[in-house]
Amino acid sequence: MAEQEKPLLIKRYASRRLYNTETSDYVTLEDIAGFIREGREVQIVDLKSGDDLTRQYLLQIIAEHESRGENVLPVTVLNDLVRSYMLPGGGMMPQFLQSSFDMLRENQAKMMENMTAMNPMTKMPGFEAMRAQQQAFLKAMTGGITRSWSAPDKEDAERGGEDTEDLDEIKKQLADLQNKLSKLK
Image (cartoon, rainbow, N blue to C red; front, side):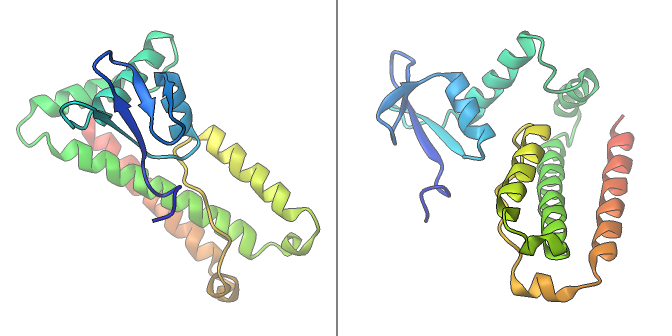
């Protein structure tokens, strides 16, 4: 497995300090949030017990950003999350959120592929630098939830007229997601 695909292992010592095993130095929660914004997966484990503490620390990062006045999640979503854990069968909310974020990442990747595959500017010098800027912009606008996109393969470039079909499919998926979200309210 490539280095970027493996989760970054962070060990928590008894002193509650967090240790980056790749760089052999201590890190803060803000450092971990930065790794995640850059697209890196992290895994935080207790050194002594081996317990996975990742969820606990990710929730703590969100809570700290909220306490500083950065609205990570709207109040209605927070209410729905709390409510979902109180209802019988409320365990479906995590799967729904996971599916929603997976769909968002997939649609963003398709959008970037379509922009690249059918654009005659791809042959211009400096296009790759411009494309990298677009990716960075989208990543910043979506709060870092995007994954890195690869260049379209030959098959994507040969498909040709599927741009409008892909766009229609993305619109349909977004409408479905909006319907599901409105039903949760």
